[in-house]
Length: 73
Image 1: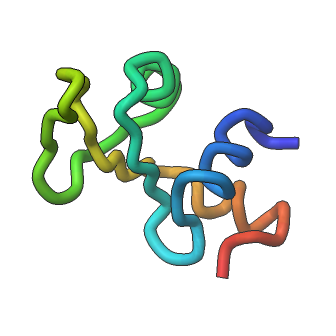
Image 2: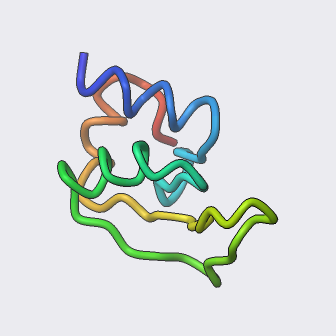
């Protein structure tokens, strides 16, 4: 399967029906995605009460992969 970790993250904490994106405050997750895919930031990042930066990352170039496993559109 195409990147099972990313697929699980999208299903659990993201959206994949139109523009694949995920919202996370977890640095490890954001670093994982950014190290493997081209990304863009949607909306306005914000800091949580415990000081973590929360961002919505758009993930570019994966629509065909999501379509191939039957979860895109």
